[in-house]
Length: 609
Image (spheres, helix red, strand yellow):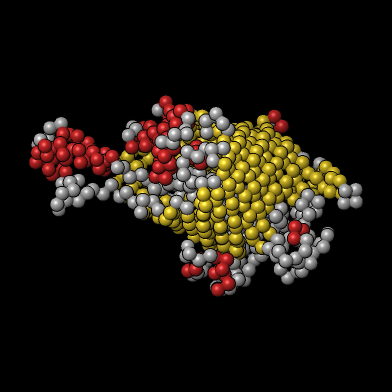
């Protein structure tokens, strides 16, 4: 009997130290809003800004959060609800999590409980517990979890009132297989199959991002393809992930195709959460609390607008990015980053986390599109966070008229978030972002091993890797976010966006001519910039509200969300002689028509696990 009790106790102790999955939590999960609040309110220690975080990291942060003496009762309840949401996948019925789950720890615990109840003989117990005993010549079990399931999501975006008849929809069935093999290794495989029918004018300006991979397959003619089809089309997507975490998660590796977001901002300059996913190998090294190194090397994807061969022939790009973060004190932060777009070739230096790509290019030749960045953060612990970032593509600081020369290509961002006192997990943020002309672009370059000039523009699958604006743009964003309950979140956002239409360097297909005298441009010359005054500019004002309700709080595996956006768009042109701006009703540039308009846009979605 003593042996049975000891074996039962040993198995329970082993099962209580449950390994967490090391695959990532998607960037659109509301838990990131809670984590951001906790960082500002000083409930938790500083975290690396390279996201997404793993499920294990998120759970550790939530447990740390609820132990903070500063956290309010309502915030603690919300954090505990999120913990239960992540942990419940181990115990909830299959119909609530949308799939079947096998857990070797749970099975071992059940076997021990059965043995302790005396329903099996001592010899039976001995056989079943051989693998979990830790005595001489015994081995601890290897944790194994397997979860197989599916989910469904339907999105509908449409206009009303002055946008009658505008409608767009996406419908996705996703099958997945995920789990753990030991406490160190986790995996997730998925296959998404969907049907879309799109209308670009149904989405708020600069808000849409493709949800599918590669082509859309037109249903009326399956051998025809599209990259943005208004008619019904079939679509596919896959975002596999294999994750390894060592030394108490101080060293992590991911081989995955996911969306990434590196930085403090609501959208960031080097890798933004709005960017399309790409296949990459990530490394995160956090040897001490005051230093973190994040690194990714991956392969970018072309936009299939010209066909599977023609569209890809000059876009065969790899990508490397690194971010070294220094947490100087609990209130001061410094980040130094570098990145490079490079046509695929065997370059070991671009795959080494310890090699700064900007310096390495000087050792192998100038064929690639390089960037450098710096970010600084300042906290008023418990109240607010302020941040600023500067991301450089090309620059010559020795020339006069620095601010007016197109050859100075950079983007910058400043912002701050205030934790609203007395309002659970509620923040007010204000952020300004400026993207200079030609930023993120690069002339086609002759490269060894390629028989034609290669395109190394800073995009992936036709969308920017960095901040989701066109070159020669700026944005002012004011946002209020709140999550009073773990299952209810909402936000209110105002955006003012200004973008050049006829000014040079205003699209991702504009390239500088480095054969010209870029440093000697004068007022009115091709490579002379003067924001808002050097051409026709588009102004967009928008106000949007969104909310999501997760019905899992009443054991219903459904989430529903809704949103509304009002926007007003108009055009301006500057009269240099009169020194004043004039409004235009319509303007056509490069066969594209632009006009003053406004819209009332609505969005609805339902997600079923």
